[in-house]
Length: 123
Image 1 (cartoon, rainbow, N blue to C red):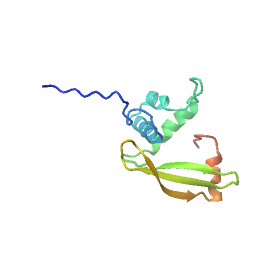
Image 2: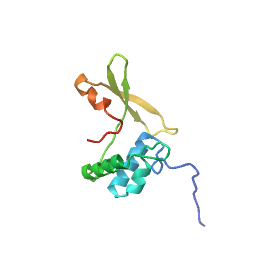
Image 3: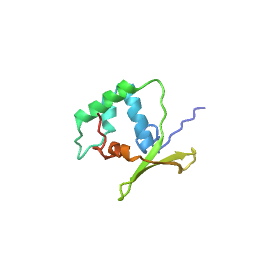
Image 4: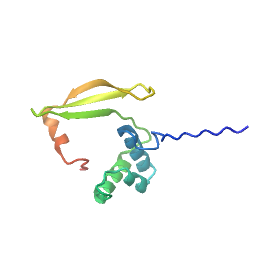
């Protein structure tokens, strides 16, 4: 007897369906030296992306990576009064996936510039 399992839903580990899976895929593709797949995960406007910036991000990930890594999920809130906070979220591997607020970090004013620079800037 042969049993075939078919899942019509995309696997989150194979598709960039969340910030976590997109980051995982970017890191895996950098680790495997697969620029084409990495590039397909980058932001583009009407099919055009910044190839120089994408290559720089790819190369930086390749240089910084190690055999293992971990990640955390943060959302940055910037308020009209100039304050910024990072909200950290965790999930409990539930179905359907649900995220819970786990921690909050008030961003010190000395670090505000880190979040005011161009989106996805690589130094």
